[in-house]
Amino acid sequence: MFCSLAVLAQAQVVFEHVSNRPIYDYLDEAANRGFIELNSAVKPYSRMFIYEKLKEIELVKDQLNKRQAGELEFFMREYIKESRSAEKRLDFLGKGLRSKKVFPYKNRNKRYDLFFYSDTNFTVSLNPILGGTGWYNQNGFNMHRFFGAEMQGYVWKFGFYGSYRDNSELKYLSDPMFLNQRSSAFAKRSGQSGDYSEARGGLTISYKGVTLGVIKDHVLWGNNYNGSNIHGGRNPSFPMVFLQIKPVKWFEVNYFHGWLSSDVLDSTRTVQYTTGRQRNFIPKFIAANLYTFRPFKKFHISVGNSVVYSERVNPVYFIPFLFYKSVDHSGDRNTNAQLFIDISSRNIKKNHLSFTMFVDEINFSNITNKELHSNWWSFKGSWRFSDFVPNFFFTAEYTYTAPMVYKHFIPTTTYETSGFNLGHYLRDNSQEIFVMLEWRPLPRLHTYIDYTFANKGEDNPDDRETINPATGKPYSLGRSFQEMVIYEKHEVGIGVNYEIVNGVSTSFRYWYTTLEDVTGIYTPAYLLNSQHNVSFGLNIGL
Image 1 (tube, rainbow, N blue to C red):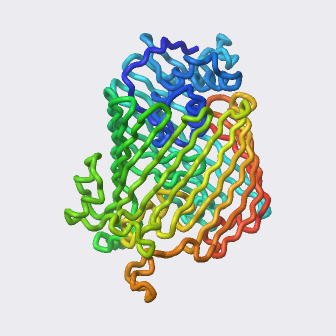
Image 2 (tube, one colour):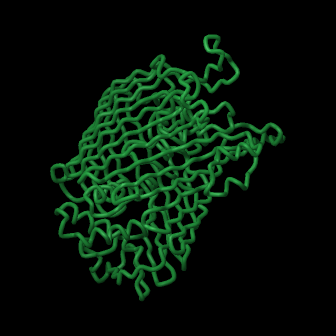
Image 3 (cartoon, one colour):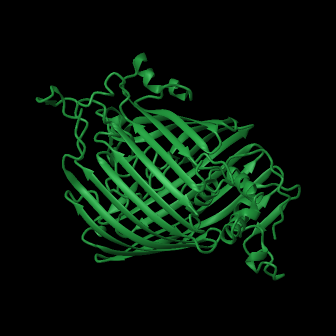
């Protein structure tokens, strides 16, 4: 049995992946209820940050209902590992089995780990990743399975973590062209099936509110409940230099410089061997910053900008405090700049209201010209009403993305990596309405019914060469929203998720879909011509 003195050491940083929805939703609920303050515009959170927020919730435990208190106890079994004690602690799966002290589970205040060790200077844990999801519809059976392992820990002021997951899909569902939110990576295709692996990890150092790290992970920027339009996180993870500064409670800075994959062949560096061709792609990079202010309690305003550039690393983009569009004036022209704003309010009790805007054209002289650049933007409005009746939640969200957003006339500076869009999963010329009603009757049990309407207009290239005779300007400038709809989906679903123990969860979902995909390229073949669908999943690890 693990016992902690709950002594917080230096706030080392290991990130909790954004796919761990239960803990992210629990903190969101706690913030909506006013138990904690939370800047939810920037994810992932660090495990130490989550632990500190759980400790804050413990201070108001008398205000929690039975389900909330049960989930607090459940999550603390995981994140108590972030605390430190003055004594060495060793725990592993099966410890205490001979003495019959390993069971029952409820008597443990720390989760089971395959291996765990902790002292005042060093902490490490190791766990397996295993599971899969099966689907059945009018097109037959499909399956996604995965296996791997993950580790994480701290040494002095350093945090480190790593995970590996090998994936296989019987009928591939994760192509970058598909309009879904399934995250993927570089895939090996064989007919309809696909295999891919994903490695994530990082090394960070933290001191007095400043965190610097080299990580390969997913980032999710922008408040949302069904896909962000700033950094959506569907793309494969990419390596980055990450910086976070939290000098005071009312202000923080987040920044990263990342290495993307352009998928644009560099013919000058491609070498032909007798055994085949060694392909090399043109280098591609991204730099992004986001400043978050809290002018008063429960209200956050975030503003930031990013730039995608290619060919060579430019040291100026390692400066976290720049307006990157202005760097163009120094002569570096192979760039594509973006601007974003996020406003989040929890000032109405139990409610979270947010508005996010992504502006892809930062030419202020033309931004009000309807025939040119005024519509190169995306916005998202979200509302969640938590516990409007105890344990019931209502969510509504609308997303609008104008034509040409996320694109660029230079192929190496598009807002994507490995062909996956970095922003909203529907990409440009699209809109979405998402509504969900949730009921969480018991700790760790999540039931829901949701409805999604999504459609998309023509997918036009950013052609700056072809002139529209009616305007005398390139066709890509001033395109109207959805001149013709080529994709439209209505989907109603019901589902149940349950976390059996820490790190082990199961899920079930049924959904009914009416779908029109004129081109047939936006939907996996397995999901075409099938209205009734069902899935079942079992996961060990995330």
